[in-house]
Length: 114
Image (cartoon, rainbow, N blue to C red; front, side):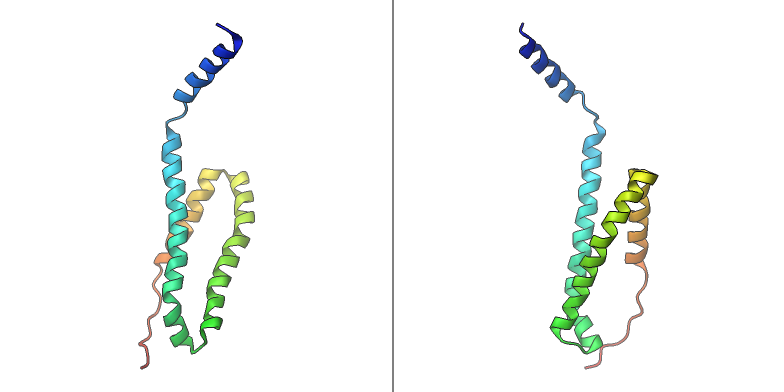
């Protein structure tokens, strides 16, 4: 058996014995990405109500989505650095908890004026 065949066999055997937690990690990260997209979609659906409630034009209400995307993007850098310092798992759990708390917090509802 040549050195190339031995190397290929070693690579194939190590791929088969990779950490089984990788699939769980993939599922959790995909769920987190889905939740972020879902949150943006919720903001998009709420735009007509925001327009009516604030009495602004559609262009002005679109700044809500832009501000949301901007704040999300600006938070990624420092959150990544905190993940390096505190540990990725701990930072992910902190961010997930903050996301759930802010998404589930009750919003005062005012009746829409017709």
